[in-house]
Length: 474
Ligand code: 2HG
Ligand code: ZN
Image 1: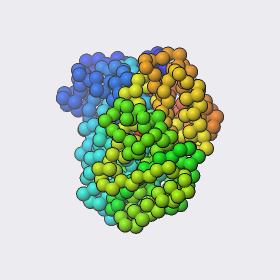
Image 2: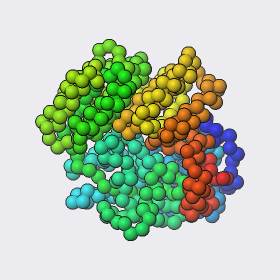
Image 3: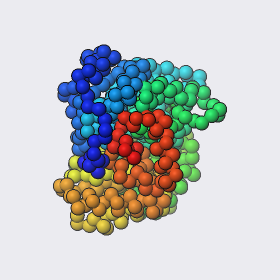
Image 4: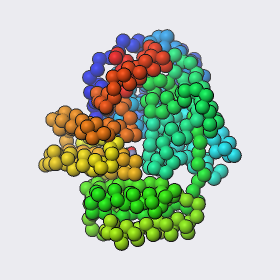
């Protein structure tokens, strides 16, 4: 995927010299200034988005990060900040010759205060590693996403990651209490703190959420974590119409109440795509138009099972669902989640892929898929899966080969449709380079101007992540 961002001209940034490399080597050690075999850092994980860079820097601390940024600001060297490189919009992939600043080695500090459930950890901590450490103490990371094995907590904050249990625990705005942000001048900003409540000023730490490296590098995060649920149950429903899916969401909210933690959808075409490309089988016999994956998190297995079974029975009795299956073991539960979490992988194997991640009011959620299918009839395959409980659709379109014409039409069609139906062109993946040209859709000029002013405060030389959400030359 080459986005329009690549057609922007290179900014007026300095080229890396041998003196610059010597400075970096002196500051963070020779081994952590990489100039060779850096493809893993200059392409995104799908290897579809490729850029280039003269060097990758791997600092170990906030202080080393600050020294690098202070120097780069002075010399006007452009930087792209990278966490686990699991993003879906090319935000962490360099375009011209930006230096890649990777937070992978800033991953030592991990401190949990069990009485309050407040965790402080380094920004480079991998989400699954943090969650495993919390599990030993009876806690859990409130956010969970398919990329958990590689994504880093600082990157999650910068990406504004959502994931599969936002419905229950809320977004990062519900959890982030403080963070350390090293800005584009190298200043170390300790924003917010570790208190659950602190209403003394602007909530500056929250500016880091979804900032995509535009304001600084998140080197440390302080956040609330949640008790690990003692009972986790999953079930799937097969449903024939979208309107029944929405009725089932209301039913789930009222019947499952506080234990409802995920309400995910996979449409019929996606399920067939999963079965076609992956060694995975649907849990239902026969074909259905929609599949819902529902999960509960609670503290009493018997009570939760009674509620979940009651919900499934009512869904079947009222003929809102045509079939229902509850997971009876951990492996059955894992199987259900693989169907949903590997849907992106199956779609990627289906051909050349055009990806969308949009928010829509529920009444319009599936009409976008239907209208896109209608528009592209005979030219492309259209898949929809996502976080229905959050109104977040992952619309994916595939063709046998790259289709330039379709590419030109598709994004404007989808994004204009979304905005004119009260949605957002990015629900959780961000803007990066992929959606750069559409970033102001649905935003007022006043809000865009405010965002540019904030950029100038944090990164006056605009060296951080150019050509992306906030462009260096605008
Ligand atoms: C998911 O929910 C991720 O699986 C990825 O946000 C979605 O790649 C996608 O379409
Ligand atoms: Zn998602």
